[in-house]
Image 1: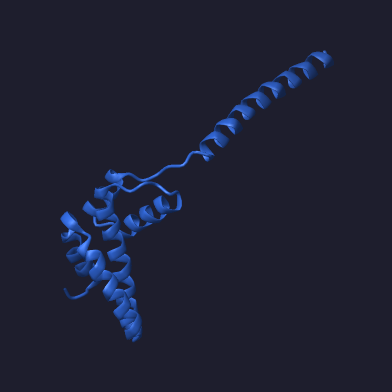
Image 2 (image 1 turned 90 degrees about the vertical axis):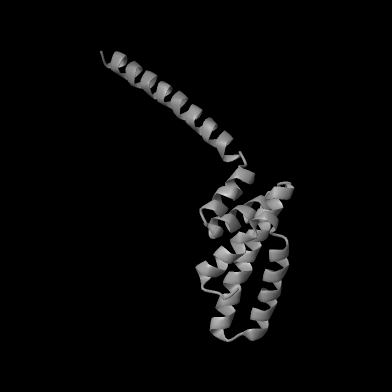
Amino acid sequence: MKNRILNLVIGLMGVLLAVLTVFVIVGLRDAGRVYHYDEEDFLRSVREQNYSSLLYHVYMNEADDIPVSADMEECYAAARYYEAATFYKAYLACGRTREAAEKKAIMAEQRALLGELDYAASEINKKLGLEE
């Protein structure tokens, strides 16, 4: 009787070990998968005026060396415009006019690259309380 119980416990532990091994293998496979953000992800962030998310998407794609299409480049410009505008506002609030002027120049450069997304610059300025 005692051997039968021990054999049952060992069998259950073997099954548990097999199931856990499968979960570990699947987890490791998924951990190695790299997700990159595509044009639709970028445009969704612009439509929703979620510019901090847009900037995050840009950084993640750049870290993974994802190729950039022409339409994505406009979204990248919107993200860079948002980043520069945010720093511009912060530098102005701190009285650091030299740094603010540098960020203002970056804003002008990125605005020229916005193309069809030019309206995003106005939305960003409005959102941050900046003058046009």
